[in-house]
Amino acid sequence: ELALGATCSRHYGPRGERREDAVTVFLHSFAPPPRMLVFGAIDYAAAVARIGDFLGYRVTVCDARPVFATPKRFPDGVEVIVDWPHRYLSGTDTDERTVICVLTHDPKFDVPLLEEALRRPAAYIGAMGSRLTHDDRMKRLAEAGLGEDELARLRSPVGLDLGARTPEEVAVSVAAEIVALRWGGSGTPLTATAGAIHPHGTRVRPRGA
Image 1 (cartoon, one colour):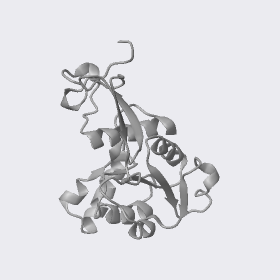
Image 2 (image 1 turned 90 degrees about the vertical axis):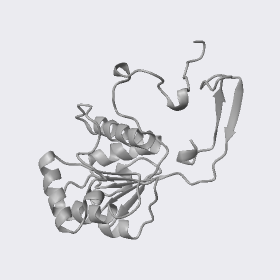
Image 3 (image 1 turned 90 degrees about the horizontal axis):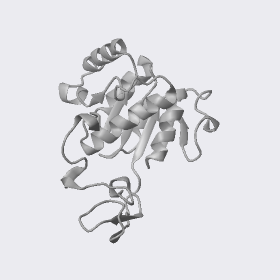
Image 4 (image 1 turned 180 degrees about the horizontal axis):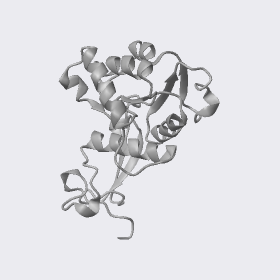
């Protein structure tokens, strides 16, 4: 919660078990919520923006095409910007909590945008596209002068392999990758793992268990 800039109460048991009632801890964060910047106002962007808002991000959607970048296509509270993506990003502050999702799927938008994104602080930089698109994009970015360490930051094709098809399913896939990267998760099904589920051996038990 503190990582997300959230203020809330959390309940723990005598050994740190979550959702018990022995101890109530009030967490008061003075940090602003982290930002999610979504570039490309397509149907997938609306779903990603919705799940980003659900996860506690302050979401901004940016697209150079005003016919797509209209507030009515996105959830309430999502900022919608009409501008060239790379130009908007160049004038926007990012930090180590910022999530950048590039859904433009067009080299004239995403190559200059990623050239800017990969040279600045961010927790996650993901780009939509096929493997063929990814290979072409990486070649163009290398020709633009980005080094191996910068290119290695790009998560592309974006998301975890969930077999997603619909915009909402793709958004879940992207969100899963963001969460896994934030907390060091592997994305492996828990049924295929052993040991404690949560860091530091913290056990999570439902009420009444």
